[in-house]
Length: 335
Ligand SMILES: CC(C)(COP(=O)(O)OP(=O)(O)OC[C@H]1O[C@@H](n2cnc3c(N)ncnc32)[C@H](O)[C@@H]1OP(=O)(O)O)[C@@H](O)C(=O)NCCC(=O)NCCS
Image 1 (cartoon, rainbow, N blue to C red):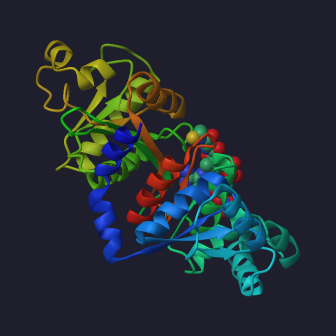
Image 2 (cartoon, helix red, strand yellow; image 1 turned 90 degrees about the vertical axis):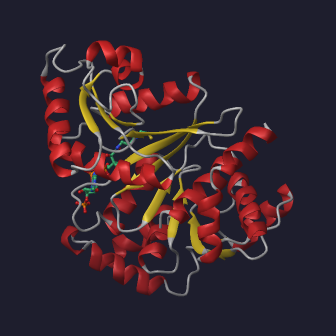
């Protein structure tokens, strides 16, 4: 396990170098969770990220001491006792004005770590946020959608997973898959946006993206609305990103197997070599990345949220401290 961990961390070298030059502050919404405390102590030891731990100071410190983690240097902020709370309430009411948000309604909402932490990012107290060790995906993502919002030029927030399979030679196999976590049934235009954002994210991980719009059909071999959607989306994506190698609609085997691609779509330069996969909906995407993770021996990093004004990311509730550490580096590097 230790060797595998080092192997995975190896791929993060350039991100860590970048952070060493420009350290970021990251909010952890579940400040007294032992996995967060272990990851924070590691981050503090390397001094390229400053953790902001949410919770009651005595509880956070007692939890760290009991588990044996040194969190000296971390900032602990208690949502129940924050000197800029009134300012936070006013700003939140302003942001949610169109929903008729009152101070009375806002206060209890902002005492919750997920909303409070997201507001710290909005107020510039922190650069980014990582939550979800105990909150559900929806409860981590919803405050971000409401407060941080979609960045100019984008119409949706989406997400991707980066899948990494270490090899004995030390050269990691890296893939990107989207949208496996946020948008339930993306439209053609939303798929185009997801394609552009995912390709950009994949590059950060050293992937030279070759994008496949996946389906149960390859170039018309099957019929159906979803086939048309993926074919049309691929066509629109090619028009929007003429320099990006894109193909669709493709079955997964045609996308990744040169042998199958030679039979099903011999003229495609992407088919057989795709490394960036756009799924038709969240069912396919979520099941797909988990098959790669559980049966294909890939490590999965994400969901990495795409298209927002600041970087907020979600952990799996089953995560371990190493995953928190890795996701913190990813989150800060993208912010
Ligand atoms: C992301 C998600 C939580 C949003 O759900 P929700 O809060 O019920 O959504 P709502 O429609 O009430 O929207 C809440 C706000 O977010 C905005 N929003 C919703 N989806 C959005 C998107 N994809 N991009 C940008 N904004 C979005 C809405 O416009 C709304 O904003 P407003 O309150 O300012 O009007 C929902 O899409 C979801 O549950 N996705 C699946 C999550 C999941 O279970 N993943 C699998 C595990 S990884």
